[in-house]
Image 1 (cartoon, one colour):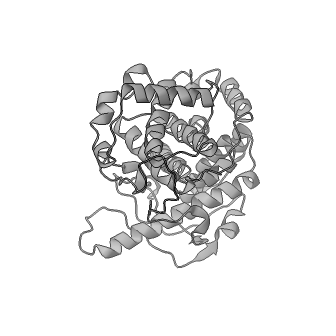
Image 2 (cartoon, rainbow, N blue to C red):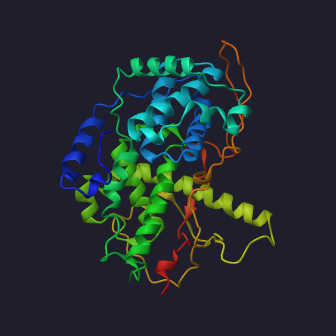
Image 3 (spheres, one colour):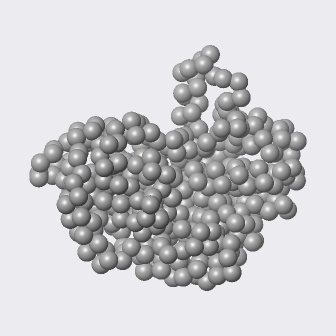
Length: 364
């Protein structure tokens, strides 16, 4: 979108935000009826990998996945065509969101390692044809707000010097903001992983990402009045979405613990180890505490300096395996395992009562 860099800091920030909120009311409906819905996670990861390779902005990545979701929802597409559709969505989104010099070039795309593993060679004519089909499908309108378009506006006031951590004043406001941005980015990427988040408004997903980040970092109150006023959402509005984000987070923590246990002796000094507190509660019980004030606790281990909350924020082009399936015009149900994790609604509905992942800026 034609938005200036860091628009959320300008004088027109409130007007731009209201324009985005108005536009999201007119977003196309999503029914989740694609015959290839089981492949959606794979192609979302493909878009994430390629966008990270070219260092595209989050807005371009999220718009690309959203275009893919809408297109798959309307058409029965073959597996080979879905590769072309996914990359065309990314190209269109990058042309809309990025500067011209940052848009991936055809030659560079074809040189990626993941392209050879997919046995795919892009052509200029093929990409132009697919881009035209996409534009006609969306009636030449790519002004489609996503959660990535709202997140920075909320993050601008997500942390305040009056916030408390475990009931104590923060010792370093700037470092707290850094870790808030890291976790918000993590949860923003989590929202790309499952189409279930499309049932929420993008602005609500972004607000839930910020609220959940504050919850994980043990900042109180979890959803302060200033964020309620800015976002226009009460805590109760965010609970259903925040619940799904927390479940995904808990699954990632368990997976990290499992990997650590499988590699004894390889842990380097300073690396983060996630510890279970032994106290658990259902997500619903944990979330329905609108003004959670944390009791004083012993200081928890700090995060390593290079800590990144999201495991899939470090995609590499060699980490994606193309699914096996028909390469011709016939469409079949493909049941390849796309990810070791199951879909979000099927995860265990238990999360740790306390997340012992305190950042160094909280050490007292």
